[in-house]
Amino acid sequence: MRTQKPLGKIRRYALGIVSGLILNLGSVAYGQLPTKIIEEPKTRRISPIPGDFSFDVTRHTVPLDEIRGGGPPKDGIPALVDPAFVSPANASKMRAQDMILGVHLGGYSKAYPVGILNWHELVNDQIGGRPVLVTW
Image (cartoon, rainbow, N blue to C red; front, side, top):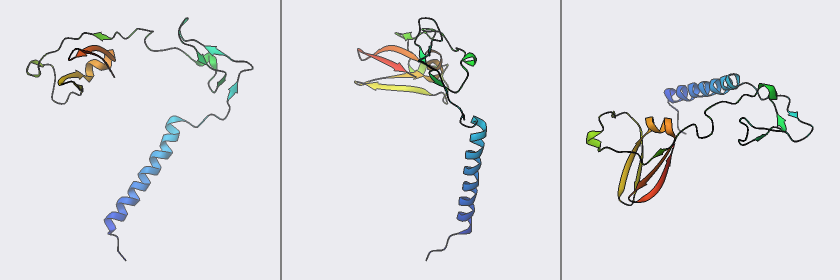
């Protein structure tokens, strides 16, 4: 029979306590599941923006008069089309810790800075003559 080292027991015990705290605090931070689901008498849909996609809210837990639209409107985040690139030697605004999304296709490689992708989310580009859509 193998004996356990005291340090290993302490680590497992501490991990158990921390895991329990995270699970318990998580339910407080995110709230409890709703106790009542409201069911509309007939199918009901709402559209955040007139003419935009609508959502079925026949069953809901949040009062419909409390739901508000948010975020940019349709096409409110412009895609980058045919972006300009610089060589790694000339990428003076990039820092070593900056994250990139790299694509290698057909012997060609390109790097898309995540800092720029955060603002545009889509890049329509070509790599080695092939059209690509880079998304973040």
